[in-house]
Amino acid sequence: MRYLVTGGAGFIGGHLTESLLADGHEVVVIDDLSTGSLDNLAKIADDPRLDFVEGDILNLPELEYLITRSDMVFHLAAAVGVELVVHDPVRTIVTNVHGTEKVLKGAARKNVKTLIASTSEVYGKSNNDEFSETDDLLIGPSVKSRWSYACSKLLDEFYAMAQHKSNGLPVIVTRFFNTVGPRQTGQYGMVLPRFVARSLAGEPLLVYGDGEQSRCFCHVFDTVRALRGLADTDDAVGKVVNVGTRHSTTINALAELVVSRLNSSSSIEHIPYEEAYEAGFEDMRRRMPNTTTIKSLIGWEPTLTLEEIIDDVAASLRD
Image 1: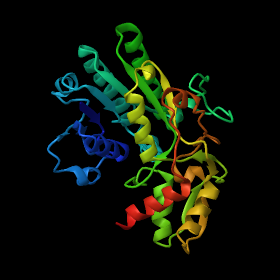
Image 2: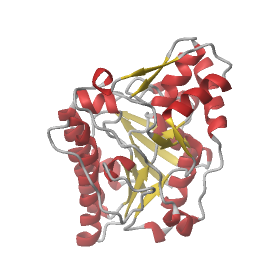
Image 3: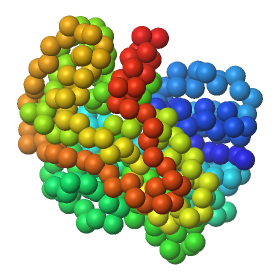
Image 4: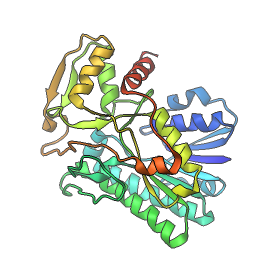
């Protein structure tokens, strides 16, 4: 098969592209390298079945042509990372909303199956113990730029479902819950690679807020396996699907585990949110997925532990 991966030089996109090529498929990657990197494609750069197109999906003339000659599209291109979202909300909205609009319009021309990557951020400020795909969503106020990312991805979801309902476009939406692993950068606020990098360097680990906010970290290898499985079943078409592990840890506990696992001398320091991001920054206290849907669709469950994730991230950074 021939796949198109937007944002294919990104963290998840690079691993997905490797997986597709390893199974003998052809892959076209589109990436403007604004947050992605050719380093993520280094292992497969010479593969003749890989076609890399450097460009922004917002103004790439051949986007529709590349979509319509593909058997399936994985749309991963997006503005990501809390720091980027807070400090450049205009870019976040334009990239996420109009980029997805262009991809879906192109796919609708020839009814090309498309998977749209969304985020657990769309659940907003709800205090649920776990989040299901049919839950109501509680987004923060528009004066807080932190919520622009969640709203932009939610609009992506609505547009994808509208194309499915109105035009029969075969679409799948996946909501990622903190995908982490080798080659992920902490440059845009991702917590685990930041912690591991500072721990390896013997520098203080900076925990934002009180550190009692909890998250569930899923290895990128497990996430890619979920994407491949969902893409291969027609039962997932027209559905929104959580992708993540149900093993929850506080950020304080994560920092302690990283220091212990890497036998580091690093201390752990707490930084107020307003110093790390902006005045009045709001965060989700808890973010755990209900994974009943994906289990029922493809029998998927994550297999790699948090300890293994830390080891893999550390090995990647040492390399």
